[in-house]
Image (tube, rainbow over all chains, first blue to last red; front, top):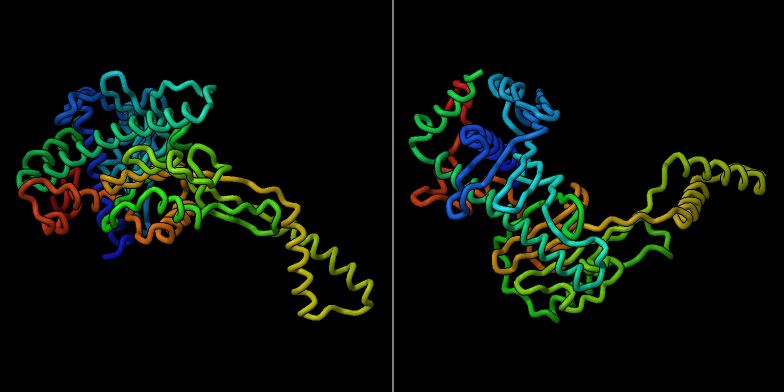
Length: 176
Length: 206
């Protein structure tokens, strides 16, 4: 199968991951334990995009606004749409990241880091330092998201997925 | 939007069949072969190539400017000029009228084609150049590459330039391929390949 077909056919994995992450975040009031990394704060905020798929009759819903409680997004999930993009705030200890995560390639956009470099220090050494500092912060975020994806995957491939995780997600969605 | 400042737009790639990392001098040589070439004094429409990540106006590629331990950092620079079709059409009409008046007869198809090429080149030479820079880092021990600040077109240029420079391709890290690299203990590749979408709200397959 070539990459374009893989993206189309297996897109649901990224969508289900985002939905599962939203569920896990809400269940823990934003506190999400990550194996080997401690407990991170993960909040879904400001903006979420849901759609019915990539076909000709694709329908998309965008929910956005400050202090969004995502009631509409939850309603869209009940109609069979799936999360294709979500705006997240992730925090671990004194580090914080804000980003939009896409289901298609787990691409990150609008990613803001809590880096502390002075933009007016422009020498080559300062620039190299800033680069390495920001790459290290990004790497930490990518590792956190990978760990979460691995946990999702382990649950998704477990024979108990329908009776345990999927059933819990469905109960959560039925809640008004 | 990039690795050095501001908000980041990040695409991840995996290197499934990367050969051993070349020595620094060989890396520098390869980057130099595909270094950015300016179009400032030529009528070209666009040009893409490697520049130093710390200075997008330099393509010297001294190892300490692109090699940071296990990390290789570089940038793709694309300069382009965009000539609007409406502007080209306007100047072509003027040039045709001028030529017709001097020749006192109609223009052949060949003359029209030559005139269009000449007008286009003249206008391109007068059109300002815009610059885009997309930064990239290569985690050489993990076989992963990140590209920052790139849209679809820049991504295609980057993937092509990467293949021509290093001799092997990049695979966009979509969730399914990430999953196949991180299969949990006891899970088989066939289990992953056979997964079907779950009906999250109580219908269809699990």
